[in-house]
Structures are given as C-alpha cells and as structure tokens.
Length: 312
Image (cartoon, rainbow, N blue to C red; front, side, top):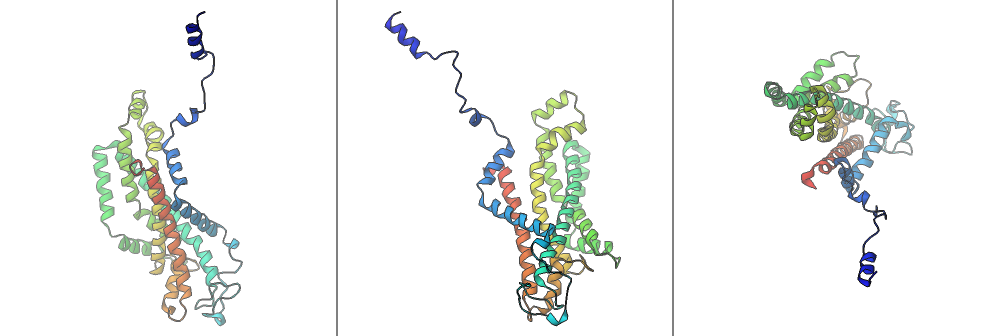
C-alpha cells in the first residue's frame, strides 16, 4: 500500500463505528405544549401568578391552615375593635373576626368562580365546536345566537336572572349565582373555540383521517379538539377571574350570595356604611378580591402569550 492510499484510509471513518448521539435530543422536534412550557419557565409573571393561585386555592380548600378562629363567632362588645393577636385585621360592626371571615370568604368566591367557569366551558365547547366543524347554516344559526347573547347587557341580565333563581329565602344563592354566571359568560369561549376549530379542520391530518373513514364524532374528539383546546383553556382561565369578580359584584348588590354564606362581596357590602368609622373591614376583603382576580388574569395572559406562536 502506498503512502497516499494509507493516508486516505486513515481519513475515512470506520463504517462500523456508531454515530454520535449527543445531538439526538436537541434535534428532536418539540410539541406546542413543550415550547409553551419552555417560555413559561422563563416568565416571571407566570410564576408570581401561579404562586398566588396556589395560595388562594389552598386557602379556599383548607382555611383552617390559615386561621383557627370561627368566622361566625361574633360578639357585639368587640364591634370595630382594632387588631389583636388572633384577629390580625380587627373586628367588623357585628364583632366578627375580619381576618377569619376574609380567609373563609375565599371558599365561596373560588367555588362559584370555578363551577361557573366549568358551566360556561361546557356550553362554549358545544356551541363553538359545532359551529366551527359543521359550518354552513349550523354556523350561521349558532353564530347569530352567540351575537344575541353578547348583545344583552351582562350586569342587567345577571341581576334579573340571579334574582329570579334565588327567590327562596332558605337558599344561600350559590347555585343561582353559578347558573347565572355560567349561562351568561360562555360567549367569548365559544367564539374562540369556533375560530380554532375552523383553522384545525382544514389541516392535512384531518383530511387524511376523513379519507381513512373517520366519522364526524371521531374527527371532532380525536383530531380537531386536542389541537384546538389550548386557546380555549386560556380563555377559561381569564374567565375564572372575571367570574370571581362578578360574584362579588352581585353579592355586593344584595342579589348574589346571602344568608349564612361568607364571601368577599358580602363583607364589602356590609362594611361599606361604616368605612369612615372602621375602614379595615372594607379594605382587606377588597385587597384579597383584587389580588385573586389579578392572579387568575395574569396567569391566563401568561399562558396565552406562551401558546400564541405570533408572540414568540
């Protein structure tokens, strides 16, 4: 063998030698959810909102972890007394512990917000998925119905419907508020779902599944819905914060939660006439309500930005 042949043989790699695999994981394509999570991990607003949401949900489920006081133990001799070692926020006009009632008020507000959002999500999913997939006259009818519901003033319709559903004096108004907010708050989610379904049903994988014999139900549930649900969930996250604020508004007006229910809206309404005498019973429920609504809206905005490829 000549020197030239020997040098050529040395330069050629061994065919049996395995190829390096250190770039295999880096070259693997990532899904939309993986890209969104990578963006969320670098978003400080997301982590702040997530921590606040976890604290609020824990407070709603396990209020005894934050206070051992009974929120219904009220003594008039303590009316408008200042903060003490156990009552950090002082007492209201009935002598109730403001801190304990603020902590326990998170349960009703979060419960109403979550259940109303789930109801709105079910209605919006049905209308949006049907309108976007079937199109034609189905889309025209459902879209016009959505426009009619959007044209109704929300606050006026909520007042009328909630008052009608909570006429029973023994009813604390929880179910009435959930139904009211759920029936009136689904339109935005339905429109987002409709547009996402229209974009997804024209993709190649849907056409391939249709050519293989997949029926409408399988196409919607197995192929279209999983690829359209991201923006829909983001809208529901923002809607959750709006529903919590709406419940507080209805309770403040006296047509939401009532009776033995404890909520931030009721606390704000009851403390309003005495704000000049004792402002803390009004301030602290308002602060907790504002932080809760802001946390859910911030969380929804962060998730929306992460799932939107145009904002990358």
